[in-house]
Image 1 (cartoon, helix red, strand yellow):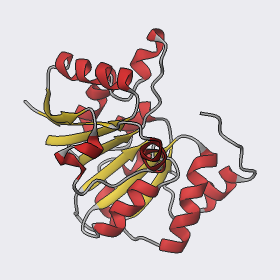
Image 2 (cartoon, rainbow, N blue to C red):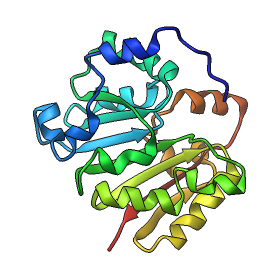
Image 3 (cartoon, helix red, strand yellow):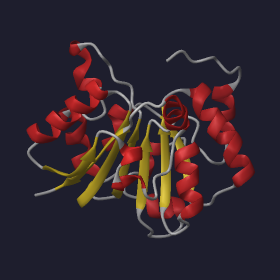
Length: 214
């Protein structure tokens, strides 16, 4: 994916009231950030924020944290949030590898992964957000029986992800589909910017939901 640089995006992020700048200092204290004890759902790789902002508007009793590493993308979500002013949504600009440094054990109820970078070269497999390496990171922050929901249009990445769940010792595959928009799981589905584009082209969307077991 080629990203167009947005001049001043890092300054905008640094000054925004909707971004968390000292994220590692909030570990174990996210209830104070939001001012309540509502469940916390996070999206890793949130792009321009369409998905997580829709969820935050629909579910005021759930707290949301959107995580994005690209400043030029995150700044677009901030522009929308300045208009919407959703009190249950904050953003972090960070690398996903550091997720366990930001949330404490059992602090997160659900993780969304939407159209993640497939990292197609075999030597980069551990960088894929559904790899065993990342599932181990999610174990550290999710509540017991916490869920991860993953969507992609990349069948190779999806097949890899299913294999990784089988290899990971503490995860259970709850459900999956190779064609979300022609399945029972489409009810209540919130689309991302990419998903809208892919569906318009007729691309099949794969989806799986996994749970952290014992």
